[in-house]
Length: 462
Picture: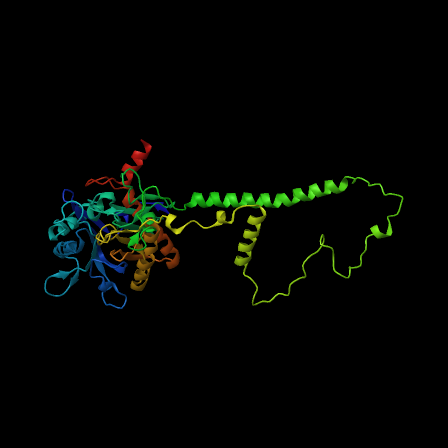
């Protein structure tokens, strides 16, 4: 497989239209011959159009366009403009009245917090996007549906980062597959190596702090605030801990061997020979191995072994406490030195109750929307299954994802020209979608007062 330009995939036309001043736009993917379509929607806040038509049990099996747009639910209006323009060009189903009805599906993302909140893609912008598709006007980054896209918004817009429209495509001369993704998430975008490349920034805005790290301190509403100095276990900490444990284990293995060598050396040394007197000890001095009638002398006297009563047997905790008391008495340490500190001396931090706004619940509809296009031969059922599998790519590249206020949507369009092994192709397609999401972060430019991944990298190099 070689990387190709997504606009080189035969059978599809791609176009953008946007209002950069007001921070919104739309992207259209046109298939003049009609494409087999599938869709899968995740999250609790989708804004979609005509997705029911793509269900496997429904009749329509040919889609003429997919529209990705900003503007939240208002942005669905752009699809009406796409319908009008395609119908004017003769695309769609001929219903016998001198007019064609194109099948246009779509999904919108929430970008009302960027630029002008009263602006959104409309009918005219949808028509313009189709015209640009026929003229070959298409680009990734801060264009189309990615014009107002952002990520890392859990603690509000001021700590977010700018993202955009991402693309990626590959082919080998037979199979061609590409993905378009408007990356707009409440969480962060991760590279293929698992590093955050765009997301929630630190309080000073100079570095990426990370949404997952923040969420660990916000499992419930009554939580302690998490500041930028808080650190959680990462891969390098785990590796260091494992290395230390292994080193300690090796030392333990070496210590017994050293003791055995020392014992061997001591045994090898000849013990001093004591001179035995020639005279035999007196009878009264001879040791007796018979137990005296009245029991052993006080010097060697020991207590009779007690009969263990299981019901009265003390617990290990009780035995430990008694041993501590006996040890302290023998060493002359005052018993009160082992007492627990008084309860009034313990200082406990009061939990801080955060508002819904501080927890990010006011940031709605942070939806990433995408479309996979290919010449692979897929049935409608397979296209829907593939759309479901492609959410694996979302999970790899975006964390967290599919939240209760997200409407993450993936469309699949195929011209059905090349037979494929479905499972092998699905694995390839998931990688393509993942790389498109990453491109949505890396191709974006800082805008609307928010830095992009390229700006943060430049700052690190400086």
